Length: 396
Ligand code: SF4
Image (cartoon, rainbow, N blue to C red; front, side, top):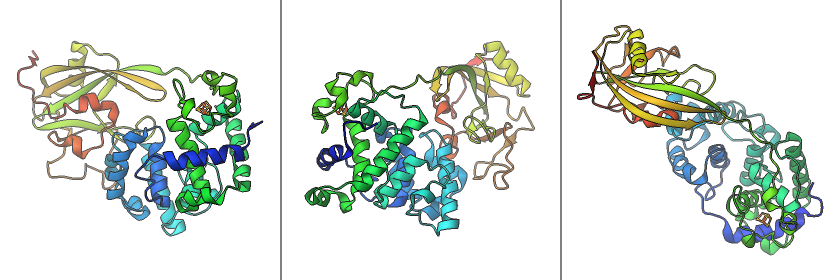
């Protein structure tokens, strides 16, 4: 795989470049195992700039494994709100509980043991083991696969799991044999070569050997021997199997206002956005008459209605094309719907874990956005949760 280009050849210019070009990032200033772990999980599928404020806030609220393990789920999801892929947060917490029970609150300095923790795969285990503990193991993600295939001009499909496994094995064997000039080693944080090497590979992929559009080859420490550059094949690499096209789903979203309350509901415990609160919504692009019929079906008496326009949210496999309506209903017209008093911090059934998915709960509209983690997918409409309906179309 690494054919004519050897890691020894890659490592020294890469690390020399890294010493002068490493970005200042909050998790790099103090690379404890906990901070490395949380940052790596946040950085999966999320840009560095977007992660920075979340990371700082998260560390302030939950500074160690113990605090994370003990955090109520709603508060945890609230801290994660906006980052998306909420299972990452749930798995972080499950793993934190595991670390408390099995490792006395300290992440194990052992690659194989790290892999047994919920949500930790080979990349994250490699990042924690090398950056926080200085162990010579690789951390191979899409960035690393891209730059390795380019520098070696390898046209294997990088989506093949066997290819990733092969790169990991070759990097592992090379990292274990690697020797570098002492003067260079001394310039690395804590003289940690494996940690610096993995971070340098990620950094090169994130700032120089860029994914879409032209990589900045002129600034690359590998420019003199990069085979893709020599063979003028940079634009063709990496070879990546086309992802399946996303399914388009049309949805109609409702802001249902009853006095100073607004309706939310819990999503089912499995599937997309599992277990999170959401605005009531149905599949399909409903017209005016259907919207009113739907609200009446829920046993409400609609008084006023306002269209909130269209919005789109893209998940990895599905796209929601949405249309929103704000509807004022006659106060307490659906007597059975649960109403949460303003001062109440815990939703009905929450403490006992019995909150049923699907049923509407009316919560205080004024601060609902701050108190409940409503997924980003609903952001275009969630900002209307405290809307006042007065002059809108009156329903006959
Ligand atoms: S020379 Fe260009 S293509 Fe090759 S590794 Fe560097 S940035 Fe990537």
